[in-house]
Image 1 (tube, each protein chain N blue to C red):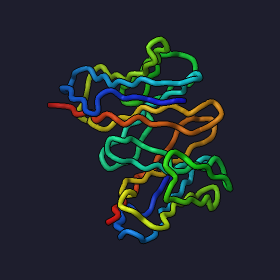
Image 2 (image 1 turned 180 degrees about the vertical axis):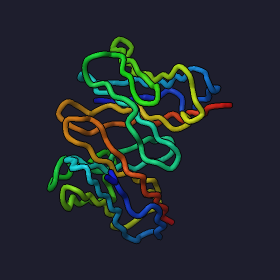
Image 3 (image 1 turned 45 degrees about the horizontal axis):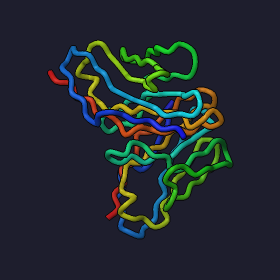
Image 4 (image 1 turned 30 degrees about the vertical axis):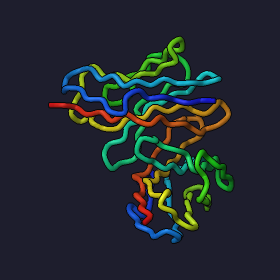
Length: 114
Length: 112
């Protein structure tokens, strides 16, 4: 069965520092992986997704993630944090190749310090 | 293009009351979803509709019913609300083959 685990429910970084949000997955089939962002009092918005092809995926707002099969990981990174990056981030995996249902992680709240 | 809209934005119910949460999308998407978001639990799928006329249970369907009225609209009904249903409810839609869900702004529901 597919699942995702996000390490760290809260992460704080200084403005300008590297952002690293961790996501590990469990999947019995090649996974389809996603990162979503949720700004306060809003719905979720897709940041980036890995389906097939290149393992380094670039998304919006300068974020990127690398699919590492050997480590079953899909960590989200951004070289330089901006105050506007403060939000909650969710990793997700598609349940299987024959369905468009998804499982979400428990979320990581990112705080950016001035 | 409004995307995914949800009504109401906020609602307070008493235990045992019923209500329907409305969701509509104007992107001609086939699939629609209802999730609930609770602190420390992430998003959990309540019900899913792959296309007009079809619905499927998700992870936490107990206490809820859904109706896919047409391609645009997908409603969620609480027949007898319980305090455990206090949550933020999100509707989402997806165009088949894209793997990109579009979320509404949410409904914050409190059951006393």
